[in-house]
Amino acid sequence: MPTITTPGLGPFAYRDEDVLTFPEGLPAFETLRIFVLAQALEFAPFVFLVSLERPSVRFVCAPLVLLAPDYSFELLPGESIPAGLEPGHYAAASGSHLLLAILTLPEHAPPTANLVAPVLIHTARRLGVQVILAGSAYSHITPIHLLAAGGAPC
Image (cartoon, rainbow, N blue to C red):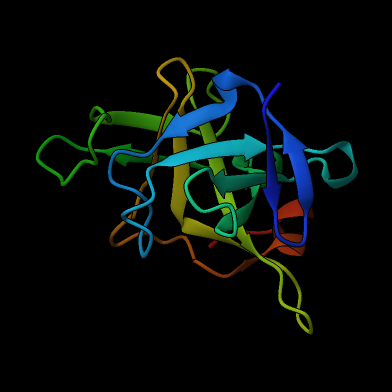
């Protein structure tokens, strides 16, 4: 099983099926296209989205189904749809894809989840994209404690 060593997190083992292609990269990291979902029991349920091309680039994420089970959005025909995605309804509770929220873990403030730009992973195709929901009522700084307590995500 291959491993990747990330600064501050050490080595993570991953499977080939954990490797994801992001055809457009991620905002501000457009040149990085190959990522892996790195998991460790001591950090569960959090996962790390780590660049295989530059392991120092990593994002702490949480499955949206755990943070906001009712989370969903619609990609309409005619909208600017990222490569590899189809118009349609995407929901956190769907089994056909994985929706992740990128988390911010400030040192002196509560952690927050970015709900306005979820990471959508098409698991069967091992394809990923960060969707920017223009005009969304969701926030990019939603406190995690509100989500865990069933508070409004927006």
